[in-house]
Structures are given as C-alpha cells and as structure tokens.
Image 1 (cartoon, rainbow, N blue to C red):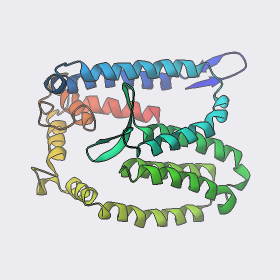
Image 2: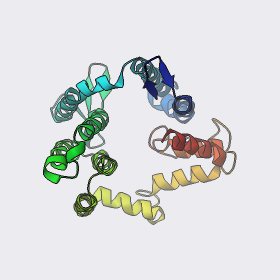
Image 3: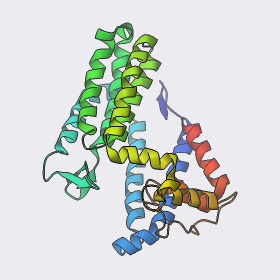
Length: 292
C-alpha cells in the first residue's frame, strides 16, 4: 500500500480506498447481521460490533505504523515470526491453552483474548515465502536446493494445522505455496508433480472424514437433505436471491432472524445480498477485484 522512495512515502490511494471501504462495509454489515443474534445470545446487541470495531481500529493503527517503516526490515522478522507461528500452533494441543469449539481445537485462550494461530501462520508463511524466493532466485528451478526446503516448512505448518482439524487453512497454505512457486519461476514439471500429489491427498482428506464428504455432497445438492446438511446453504440461497436488484434495505433482512446460521460470520455475504441486492454485492466484488 505504501512505497518508500528517497523523498517521501507515496500512497496508493486506490488500494487504500478499497481497504478502508471494505473495512467500513464490514463494520456496517456485521452490526446489521449480528444485532438480533447478539441481543438474544449475549443480552447486548452491540456485542459483536464492538469486537469488530476494536480489531478494525487496531488494524488501521497497525497499517499506519507499518506505513512509516521500511518494509525491507520485515526480512529480519521472517524467521522469528515463523518460529512463533509454529510454537503457537503447537500450543493449541496443550490442555488448558487450546480451546475446543465445535469439535475443533484451533484457538488459544490467552488472558482476555482468543487467538487463532493459523491466521498468524498464514501471514508469517507469506513473509517467509517472499523472503525465501527473493533470496533463492538462482536455485528456484532446482528441486533439492530451491523447492525442498520450503516444502519442509510447509509440511510442518500443515502437520500442525490439519489435525486440529482445519482442512481449509491447511489447503490454503498449500495453494499459497504453489502460487508462490509459479510466480517465482519454478519449473512446470515440478509444479505438475506437486499438483499430481496434491490431488489424491485432497481427495483422501475429503473422503476420509465423513463430515467433509457430507459437506461436499450438501454443497452440490443441498435439497437432498434440506433440514440438516443442506439447511445452511439453502437458507443462504434464499437470503441472497430475495435481495433481487436493490435489496430489501439495510437492516431489513429476514433470514438473519434465526433462519440463517452464523449470519454475521461465514454467511454474511448472503445477508449483504438480501439487504443490498445485486447492486450491493457487485460493488463489494468490484472492491475485492481492485484490491487484488
């Protein structure tokens, strides 16, 4: 977002504007989607939006501070951040520190805060890949010297994340690795070999766990089990489709009123579609495209 030059800091206003616009939309829609749920569950309609505002303001503050720092200094933090990520992931398996929610042990309870180490691991892994491939330009086309070391690091992270269980973030790390390898100029043969290994491993991970297999089937045909496995997807489609062109109006969504599970988290996009319509979700998608 910020590029340092000899005289001053140049601000990319399009990138900054997209980030702030998405953050603002996030604040508004989290409040709209969560107020009723928060009042019913927590006795305070502002419970979730207060947390969202806290983390959002903290993120903007961190963005401002980092804009004043030469990004090249992050090189010195690459390995410490990677080590801390591995340590935090390992701590999720320690009784008393790791929190089990919904059958998954993905969070750490530290004082008044709850932390998901896999999110920090994604950031540290990005920094590590960027640093590693910028340093290994001459050997990236060699498997043993250029690719194998980074595969080992990725394997350690995946080995800690996947059993939590968190197949989504483990798969995301692998996809990120393949993307970085392609951008860095790795041989297509090596990428093809990694891809050919990833396909059977992914299929095994899906079909080995019954609930993942069930989720895939529910996604492909939610109406086969409308009251159980397909319930959430069907409710999200009803929510999204009922918005039509301009939506029901901000705050006027109906599906968030205990029909749509997790309306303020995983399925908030369907709430946006219902309240802001096709126009609203199109603007959201365009902002993400500009950001990318």
